[in-house]
Length: 455
Image 1 (cartoon, helix red, strand yellow):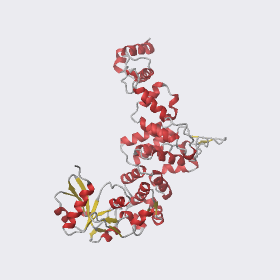
Image 2 (cartoon, helix red, strand yellow):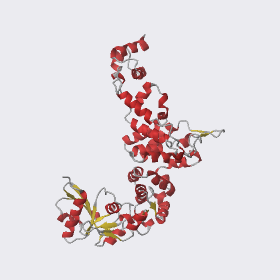
Image 3 (cartoon, helix red, strand yellow):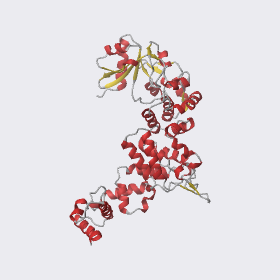
Image 4 (cartoon, one colour):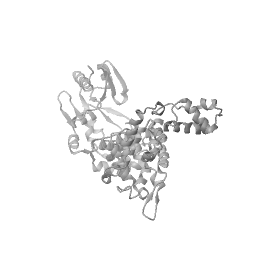
Protein backbone atom coordinates (compact mmCIF):
# COMPACT_ATOMS: atom_id res chain seq x y z
CA UNK A 1 0.00 0.00 0.00
CA UNK A 2 1.40 3.40 -1.04
CA UNK A 3 2.41 5.64 1.83
CA UNK A 4 0.37 8.83 2.20
CA UNK A 5 2.52 11.98 2.41
CA UNK A 6 0.38 13.45 5.16
CA UNK A 7 0.84 10.30 7.24
CA UNK A 8 4.61 10.49 6.76
CA UNK A 9 4.65 14.19 7.68
CA UNK A 10 2.63 13.38 10.79
CA UNK A 11 5.18 10.72 11.72
CA UNK A 12 7.97 13.29 11.28
CA UNK A 13 6.15 15.71 13.59
CA UNK A 14 5.59 12.99 16.19
CA UNK A 15 9.24 11.92 16.12
CA UNK A 16 10.50 15.47 16.55
CA UNK A 17 8.09 16.01 19.46
CA UNK A 18 9.24 12.73 21.00
CA UNK A 19 12.74 14.20 21.10
CA UNK A 20 11.46 17.26 22.93
CA UNK A 21 11.15 19.72 20.04
CA UNK A 22 8.32 21.91 18.83
CA UNK A 23 7.01 20.45 15.56
CA UNK A 24 3.98 21.43 13.44
CA UNK A 25 2.70 21.55 9.89
CA UNK A 26 3.48 24.93 8.34
CA UNK A 27 2.40 27.25 5.53
CA UNK A 28 0.52 26.17 2.45
CA UNK A 29 -0.62 22.76 3.68
CA UNK A 30 -2.30 24.38 6.69
CA UNK A 31 -3.98 26.93 4.41
CA UNK A 32 -5.29 24.30 2.03
CA UNK A 33 -6.59 22.01 4.77
CA UNK A 34 -8.51 24.91 6.30
CA UNK A 35 -10.00 25.56 2.83
CA UNK A 36 -10.92 21.88 2.53
CA UNK A 37 -8.44 21.28 -0.29
CA UNK A 38 -5.87 18.52 -0.77
CA UNK A 39 -2.39 20.01 -0.19
CA UNK A 40 0.19 19.31 -2.89
CA UNK A 41 2.82 18.73 -0.21
CA UNK A 42 3.36 18.97 3.52
CA UNK A 43 6.06 21.07 5.20
CA UNK A 44 7.09 20.81 8.82
CA UNK A 45 8.41 23.61 11.06
CA UNK A 46 10.39 22.71 14.16
CA UNK A 47 12.50 24.16 16.95
CA UNK A 48 15.09 21.43 16.28
CA UNK A 49 18.30 22.70 14.72
CA UNK A 50 19.38 21.30 11.33
CA UNK A 51 22.04 19.06 12.89
CA UNK A 52 19.48 17.71 15.33
CA UNK A 53 17.04 16.92 12.52
CA UNK A 54 19.79 15.03 10.70
CA UNK A 55 20.62 13.04 13.81
CA UNK A 56 17.00 12.06 14.48
CA UNK A 57 16.16 10.69 11.03
CA UNK A 58 17.99 7.96 9.17
CA UNK A 59 17.88 9.51 5.70
CA UNK A 60 18.07 13.26 5.10
CA UNK A 61 19.14 15.71 2.41
CA UNK A 62 20.73 19.06 3.38
CA UNK A 63 19.06 20.99 0.54
CA UNK A 64 19.09 24.35 2.36
CA UNK A 65 20.90 23.70 5.60
CA UNK A 66 22.30 27.22 5.86
CA UNK A 67 18.70 28.46 6.00
CA UNK A 68 17.59 25.71 8.35
CA UNK A 69 16.01 23.42 5.74
CA UNK A 70 16.53 19.67 5.80
CA UNK A 71 14.57 17.21 3.65
CA UNK A 72 13.61 14.00 5.46
CA UNK A 73 13.04 10.92 3.30
CA UNK A 74 10.77 8.15 4.63
CA UNK A 75 9.09 5.39 2.63
CA UNK A 76 9.80 7.20 -0.63
CA UNK A 77 8.16 10.42 0.59
CA UNK A 78 10.14 13.65 1.01
CA UNK A 79 9.17 16.06 3.77
CA UNK A 80 10.79 19.49 4.03
CA UNK A 81 11.64 20.25 7.65
CA UNK A 82 12.54 23.85 8.44
CA UNK A 83 13.96 25.14 11.69
CA UNK A 84 11.97 28.07 13.08
CA UNK A 85 13.81 31.22 12.16
CA UNK A 86 13.83 34.99 11.86
CA UNK A 87 15.27 36.44 8.64
CA UNK A 88 17.76 39.24 8.23
CA UNK A 89 17.86 41.68 5.31
CA UNK A 90 17.16 40.43 1.75
CA UNK A 91 20.11 41.86 -0.15
CA UNK A 92 19.50 39.93 -3.38
CA UNK A 93 15.70 40.18 -3.28
CA UNK A 94 15.33 36.43 -2.96
CA UNK A 95 17.07 35.00 0.10
CA UNK A 96 17.84 36.58 3.48
CA UNK A 97 21.47 37.59 3.97
CA UNK A 98 21.36 35.90 7.36
CA UNK A 99 18.98 33.86 9.48
CA UNK A 100 18.59 33.50 13.22
CA UNK A 101 17.11 30.29 14.55
CA UNK A 102 14.35 30.78 17.12
CA UNK A 103 12.00 28.68 19.23
CA UNK A 104 8.87 30.80 18.80
CA UNK A 105 6.15 29.96 16.27
CA UNK A 106 5.00 33.57 16.30
CA UNK A 107 8.46 34.89 15.49
CA UNK A 108 8.75 32.49 12.57
CA UNK A 109 5.28 33.47 11.32
CA UNK A 110 6.32 37.13 11.36
CA UNK A 111 8.79 36.57 8.50
CA UNK A 112 6.21 35.00 6.16
CA UNK A 113 4.62 36.96 3.32
CA UNK A 114 0.83 36.52 3.64
CA UNK A 115 -1.35 35.86 6.66
CA UNK A 116 -2.93 32.80 5.05
CA UNK A 117 0.56 31.26 4.72
CA UNK A 118 1.67 32.19 8.25
CA UNK A 119 -0.29 29.56 10.18
CA UNK A 120 0.76 26.31 11.81
CA UNK A 121 -1.15 23.16 12.71
CA UNK A 122 -0.47 20.33 15.12
CA UNK A 123 -1.60 17.26 13.11
CA UNK A 124 -1.97 15.15 16.24
CA UNK A 125 -4.35 17.54 18.07
CA UNK A 126 -5.70 19.60 15.16
CA UNK A 127 -4.80 22.84 16.96
CA UNK A 128 -4.21 25.85 14.67
CA UNK A 129 -1.62 28.47 15.60
CA UNK A 130 -2.67 31.72 13.94
CA UNK A 131 -0.97 34.93 15.06
CA UNK A 132 -1.97 37.35 12.28
CA UNK A 133 -5.61 36.57 11.45
CA UNK A 134 -5.00 34.12 8.62
CA UNK A 135 -8.12 32.08 9.33
CA UNK A 136 -10.34 35.16 9.21
CA UNK A 137 -8.68 36.33 5.98
CA UNK A 138 -9.34 32.92 4.43
CA UNK A 139 -12.95 33.11 5.53
CA UNK A 140 -13.23 36.62 4.06
CA UNK A 141 -11.38 35.69 0.86
CA UNK A 142 -8.66 38.28 1.38
CA UNK A 143 -4.93 38.11 0.65
CA UNK A 144 -3.16 40.27 3.22
CA UNK A 145 0.51 40.81 3.97
CA UNK A 146 2.02 39.93 7.32
CA UNK A 147 2.98 43.25 8.85
CA UNK A 148 4.05 46.03 6.48
CA UNK A 149 3.08 45.08 2.91
CA UNK A 150 5.76 47.20 1.26
CA UNK A 151 8.48 45.67 3.42
CA UNK A 152 7.31 42.13 2.63
CA UNK A 153 7.41 42.83 -1.11
CA UNK A 154 10.73 44.64 -0.96
CA UNK A 155 12.21 41.50 0.59
CA UNK A 156 11.24 39.47 -2.48
CA UNK A 157 9.60 41.10 -5.51
CA UNK A 158 8.20 37.73 -6.56
CA UNK A 159 5.59 38.16 -3.83
CA UNK A 160 3.77 40.61 -6.10
CA UNK A 161 3.13 37.85 -8.62
CA UNK A 162 2.50 35.31 -5.85
CA UNK A 163 -0.30 37.49 -4.49
CA UNK A 164 -1.85 37.59 -7.96
CA UNK A 165 -1.43 33.83 -8.39
CA UNK A 166 -3.18 33.12 -5.10
CA UNK A 167 -5.98 35.51 -6.08
CA UNK A 168 -6.35 33.59 -9.36
CA UNK A 169 -6.21 30.21 -7.67
CA UNK A 170 -8.79 30.91 -4.98
CA UNK A 171 -10.81 33.75 -6.47
CA UNK A 172 -9.75 36.01 -3.57
CA UNK A 173 -9.52 39.79 -3.30
CA UNK A 174 -6.27 41.56 -2.42
CA UNK A 175 -6.05 43.80 0.65
CA UNK A 176 -5.85 47.57 -0.16
CA UNK A 177 -2.48 47.97 1.59
CA UNK A 178 -1.04 45.09 -0.43
CA UNK A 179 -2.54 46.50 -3.62
CA UNK A 180 -0.89 49.85 -2.95
CA UNK A 181 2.47 48.25 -2.28
CA UNK A 182 2.33 46.19 -5.48
CA UNK A 183 1.38 49.21 -7.58
CA UNK A 184 4.31 51.14 -6.11
CA UNK A 185 6.92 48.42 -6.63
CA UNK A 186 5.66 46.85 -9.88
CA UNK A 187 8.01 48.99 -12.07
CA UNK A 188 10.94 47.42 -10.19
CA UNK A 189 9.84 43.81 -10.80
CA UNK A 190 12.91 42.86 -12.84
CA UNK A 191 15.01 45.99 -12.43
CA UNK A 192 17.76 47.01 -10.02
CA UNK A 193 19.75 44.85 -7.59
CA UNK A 194 16.59 43.14 -6.30
CA UNK A 195 15.11 42.61 -9.76
CA UNK A 196 13.79 39.13 -10.51
CA UNK A 197 15.25 36.67 -12.98
CA UNK A 198 12.89 35.99 -15.88
CA UNK A 199 12.81 32.30 -15.01
CA UNK A 200 11.17 33.11 -11.65
CA UNK A 201 8.72 35.54 -13.27
CA UNK A 202 7.82 32.95 -15.90
CA UNK A 203 7.12 30.26 -13.30
CA UNK A 204 4.66 32.47 -11.39
CA UNK A 205 3.03 33.66 -14.61
CA UNK A 206 2.52 30.03 -15.60
CA UNK A 207 0.79 29.49 -12.27
CA UNK A 208 -1.54 32.44 -12.92
CA UNK A 209 -2.57 31.23 -16.38
CA UNK A 210 -3.14 27.64 -15.26
CA UNK A 211 -5.12 28.63 -12.15
CA UNK A 212 -8.85 28.15 -11.73
CA UNK A 213 -9.51 31.84 -12.51
CA UNK A 214 -6.78 33.10 -14.89
CA UNK A 215 -8.75 36.21 -15.91
CA UNK A 216 -8.76 37.43 -12.31
CA UNK A 217 -4.98 37.28 -12.32
CA UNK A 218 -4.67 38.98 -15.71
CA UNK A 219 -6.95 41.81 -14.57
CA UNK A 220 -4.87 42.33 -11.44
CA UNK A 221 -1.68 42.34 -13.52
CA UNK A 222 -3.15 45.07 -15.72
CA UNK A 223 -4.42 47.08 -12.76
CA UNK A 224 -1.21 46.88 -10.72
CA UNK A 225 1.19 47.62 -13.58
CA UNK A 226 2.67 44.12 -13.58
CA UNK A 227 1.57 43.40 -17.14
CA UNK A 228 3.59 46.41 -18.27
CA UNK A 229 6.65 44.63 -16.88
CA UNK A 230 5.90 41.10 -18.09
CA UNK A 231 4.06 41.45 -21.44
CA UNK A 232 3.90 45.18 -22.23
CA UNK A 233 2.73 44.38 -25.77
CA UNK A 234 -0.71 43.59 -24.34
CA UNK A 235 -1.21 47.14 -23.10
CA UNK A 236 -1.86 48.28 -26.68
CA UNK A 237 -4.78 45.85 -26.91
CA UNK A 238 -6.55 47.91 -24.22
CA UNK A 239 -5.91 51.23 -25.96
CA UNK A 240 -7.49 52.91 -29.03
CA UNK A 241 -5.10 50.81 -31.14
CA UNK A 242 -6.87 47.78 -29.73
CA UNK A 243 -10.28 48.84 -31.01
CA UNK A 244 -11.92 46.12 -33.10
CA UNK A 245 -14.51 46.00 -35.85
CA UNK A 246 -17.85 46.65 -34.07
CA UNK A 247 -19.74 44.23 -36.32
CA UNK A 248 -17.53 41.22 -35.65
CA UNK A 249 -16.62 42.19 -32.08
CA UNK A 250 -19.51 43.80 -30.19
CA UNK A 251 -17.81 42.75 -26.92
CA UNK A 252 -15.35 45.63 -27.15
CA UNK A 253 -11.64 46.02 -27.78
CA UNK A 254 -8.97 43.38 -28.30
CA UNK A 255 -8.23 43.09 -24.59
CA UNK A 256 -11.90 42.44 -23.77
CA UNK A 257 -11.97 39.75 -26.47
CA UNK A 258 -8.71 38.17 -25.29
CA UNK A 259 -10.04 37.96 -21.72
CA UNK A 260 -13.06 36.01 -22.95
CA UNK A 261 -10.85 33.68 -24.99
CA UNK A 262 -8.64 32.95 -21.96
CA UNK A 263 -11.73 32.37 -19.86
CA UNK A 264 -12.97 29.88 -22.45
CA UNK A 265 -9.64 28.04 -22.28
CA UNK A 266 -9.37 27.89 -18.48
CA UNK A 267 -8.14 24.48 -17.36
CA UNK A 268 -6.15 23.89 -20.57
CA UNK A 269 -2.38 23.65 -20.88
CA UNK A 270 -0.18 26.67 -20.22
CA UNK A 271 0.89 26.81 -23.88
CA UNK A 272 -2.68 26.80 -25.17
CA UNK A 273 -3.86 29.47 -22.72
CA UNK A 274 -0.86 31.69 -23.45
CA UNK A 275 -1.56 31.30 -27.17
CA UNK A 276 -5.15 32.33 -26.46
CA UNK A 277 -3.92 35.39 -24.59
CA UNK A 278 -1.55 36.33 -27.43
CA UNK A 279 -3.59 35.24 -30.45
CA UNK A 280 -4.59 38.83 -31.32
CA UNK A 281 -1.54 40.62 -29.91
CA UNK A 282 -0.69 41.73 -33.47
CA UNK A 283 -3.98 43.59 -34.00
CA UNK A 284 -2.84 47.01 -32.69
CA UNK A 285 0.10 47.00 -35.11
CA UNK A 286 -2.08 46.12 -38.10
CA UNK A 287 -5.16 48.20 -37.31
CA UNK A 288 -6.79 50.17 -40.13
CA UNK A 289 -9.83 52.34 -39.43
CA UNK A 290 -12.11 53.10 -42.34
CA UNK A 291 -14.46 56.05 -42.93
CA UNK A 292 -17.49 53.77 -42.76
CA UNK A 293 -16.61 52.91 -39.15
CA UNK A 294 -15.30 49.43 -39.90
CA UNK A 295 -11.89 48.25 -38.67
CA UNK A 296 -9.58 45.72 -40.33
CA UNK A 297 -6.42 44.01 -39.07
CA UNK A 298 -5.06 42.20 -42.12
CA UNK A 299 -1.97 40.11 -41.38
CA UNK A 300 -2.35 40.33 -37.61
CA UNK A 301 -1.86 36.59 -37.16
CA UNK A 302 1.54 36.67 -38.86
CA UNK A 303 2.61 39.83 -37.02
CA UNK A 304 1.31 38.37 -33.77
CA UNK A 305 3.29 35.17 -34.31
CA UNK A 306 6.54 37.13 -34.49
CA UNK A 307 5.58 39.09 -31.39
CA UNK A 308 4.71 35.84 -29.61
CA UNK A 309 8.14 34.50 -30.49
CA UNK A 310 9.79 37.49 -28.80
CA UNK A 311 7.51 37.19 -25.76
CA UNK A 312 8.14 33.47 -25.25
CA UNK A 313 11.88 34.02 -25.52
CA UNK A 314 11.66 36.79 -22.92
CA UNK A 315 9.80 34.38 -20.63
CA UNK A 316 12.61 31.85 -21.10
CA UNK A 317 10.26 29.15 -22.33
CA UNK A 318 11.69 26.02 -23.90
CA UNK A 319 12.09 25.92 -27.67
CA UNK A 320 9.32 23.33 -27.84
CA UNK A 321 6.84 25.44 -25.86
CA UNK A 322 7.77 28.58 -27.77
CA UNK A 323 7.29 26.91 -31.15
CA UNK A 324 3.95 25.47 -30.11
CA UNK A 325 2.62 28.87 -28.96
CA UNK A 326 3.92 30.71 -32.03
CA UNK A 327 2.31 28.20 -34.38
CA UNK A 328 -1.05 28.44 -32.63
CA UNK A 329 -0.98 32.22 -32.97
CA UNK A 330 0.15 32.05 -36.60
CA UNK A 331 -2.56 29.62 -37.67
CA UNK A 332 -5.51 30.82 -35.60
CA UNK A 333 -7.10 32.80 -38.46
CA UNK A 334 -6.72 29.94 -40.93
CA UNK A 335 -8.80 27.79 -38.58
CA UNK A 336 -11.82 29.99 -39.25
CA UNK A 337 -11.73 29.14 -42.98
CA UNK A 338 -11.57 25.34 -42.84
CA UNK A 339 -14.98 24.76 -44.46
CA UNK A 340 -13.76 26.31 -47.69
CA UNK A 341 -10.42 24.50 -47.88
CA UNK A 342 -9.45 22.00 -50.54
CA UNK A 343 -9.46 18.45 -49.22
CA UNK A 344 -5.68 18.22 -49.49
CA UNK A 345 -5.09 21.39 -47.45
CA UNK A 346 -7.63 20.35 -44.85
CA UNK A 347 -6.05 16.91 -44.47
CA UNK A 348 -2.61 18.50 -44.12
CA UNK A 349 -3.99 20.70 -41.36
CA UNK A 350 -5.68 17.80 -39.60
CA UNK A 351 -2.42 15.84 -39.64
CA UNK A 352 -0.68 18.42 -37.46
CA UNK A 353 0.39 17.30 -33.98
CA UNK A 354 -1.25 20.39 -32.49
CA UNK A 355 -4.59 20.02 -34.29
CA UNK A 356 -6.59 19.54 -31.09
CA UNK A 357 -5.08 22.73 -29.62
CA UNK A 358 -5.88 24.56 -32.87
CA UNK A 359 -9.47 23.32 -32.71
CA UNK A 360 -9.78 24.38 -29.06
CA UNK A 361 -8.33 27.83 -29.82
CA UNK A 362 -10.66 28.36 -32.78
CA UNK A 363 -13.65 27.38 -30.66
CA UNK A 364 -12.57 29.67 -27.78
CA UNK A 365 -11.89 32.49 -30.25
CA UNK A 366 -15.28 32.16 -31.91
CA UNK A 367 -16.94 32.19 -28.48
CA UNK A 368 -14.82 35.11 -27.32
CA UNK A 369 -17.65 37.63 -27.42
CA UNK A 370 -18.90 36.93 -23.90
CA UNK A 371 -22.58 37.83 -23.48
CA UNK A 372 -22.70 38.89 -27.13
CA UNK A 373 -22.04 35.33 -28.33
CA UNK A 374 -25.45 34.19 -29.55
CA UNK A 375 -25.39 30.44 -30.19
CA UNK A 376 -21.74 30.61 -31.35
CA UNK A 377 -22.45 30.12 -35.08
CA UNK A 378 -18.79 30.47 -36.03
CA UNK A 379 -17.19 27.59 -34.14
CA UNK A 380 -15.69 24.90 -36.35
CA UNK A 381 -15.22 22.41 -33.52
CA UNK A 382 -17.89 19.88 -34.50
CA UNK A 383 -17.01 20.13 -38.19
CA UNK A 384 -13.31 19.50 -37.57
CA UNK A 385 -13.80 16.71 -35.06
CA UNK A 386 -16.19 15.11 -37.54
CA UNK A 387 -13.59 15.37 -40.30
CA UNK A 388 -10.97 13.79 -38.06
CA UNK A 389 -13.31 10.89 -37.38
CA UNK A 390 -14.21 10.60 -41.07
CA UNK A 391 -10.62 10.59 -42.25
CA UNK A 392 -9.59 8.04 -39.64
CA UNK A 393 -12.13 5.61 -41.19
CA UNK A 394 -11.48 6.38 -44.85
CA UNK A 395 -11.23 3.27 -47.05
CA UNK A 396 -8.25 4.35 -49.14
CA UNK A 397 -5.12 3.67 -47.08
CA UNK A 398 -3.21 6.26 -49.10
CA UNK A 399 -5.56 8.99 -47.91
CA UNK A 400 -5.55 8.13 -44.22
CA UNK A 401 -4.20 10.69 -41.76
CA UNK A 402 -0.45 10.28 -41.59
CA UNK A 403 -0.28 8.15 -44.74
CA UNK A 404 3.21 7.91 -46.28
CA UNK A 405 3.64 9.88 -49.53
CA UNK A 406 3.45 7.73 -52.66
CA UNK A 407 5.83 10.10 -54.46
CA UNK A 408 9.25 10.73 -52.93
CA UNK A 409 12.64 11.99 -54.00
CA UNK A 410 13.92 8.60 -55.07
CA UNK A 411 11.00 8.15 -57.47
CA UNK A 412 11.61 11.60 -58.96
CA UNK A 413 15.28 10.78 -59.55
CA UNK A 414 14.27 7.50 -61.21
CA UNK A 415 11.97 9.50 -63.49
CA UNK A 416 14.87 11.73 -64.53
CA UNK A 417 14.45 14.78 -62.29
CA UNK A 418 17.55 16.38 -60.81
CA UNK A 419 17.51 17.34 -57.10
CA UNK A 420 16.73 21.04 -56.64
CA UNK A 421 13.97 23.56 -55.89
CA UNK A 422 11.61 21.84 -58.35
CA UNK A 423 11.64 18.74 -56.14
CA UNK A 424 9.66 20.41 -53.35
CA UNK A 425 7.10 21.84 -55.73
CA UNK A 426 6.44 18.41 -57.30
CA UNK A 427 6.40 16.62 -53.93
CA UNK A 428 3.94 19.11 -52.42
CA UNK A 429 1.62 18.89 -55.43
CA UNK A 430 1.86 15.10 -55.46
CA UNK A 431 0.93 14.90 -51.75
CA UNK A 432 -2.02 17.23 -52.36
CA UNK A 433 -3.20 15.03 -55.24
CA UNK A 434 -2.80 11.93 -53.08
CA UNK A 435 -4.95 13.47 -50.35
CA UNK A 436 -7.55 14.42 -52.95
CA UNK A 437 -7.72 10.77 -53.98
CA UNK A 438 -6.32 11.36 -57.49
CA UNK A 439 -4.17 8.24 -57.11
CA UNK A 440 -3.86 5.56 -54.42
CA UNK A 441 -1.01 3.29 -55.59
CA UNK A 442 2.69 3.79 -56.31
CA UNK A 443 2.19 2.85 -59.96
CA UNK A 444 -0.62 5.37 -60.39
CA UNK A 445 1.49 7.99 -58.61
CA UNK A 446 4.36 7.51 -61.08
CA UNK A 447 1.92 7.83 -63.93
CA UNK A 448 0.52 11.06 -62.49
CA UNK A 449 4.01 12.61 -62.16
CA UNK A 450 4.89 11.59 -65.70
CA UNK A 451 1.65 13.01 -67.04
CA UNK A 452 1.93 16.28 -65.14
CA UNK A 453 5.63 17.06 -65.41
CA UNK A 454 7.22 14.90 -68.16
CA UNK A 455 4.74 14.53 -70.97
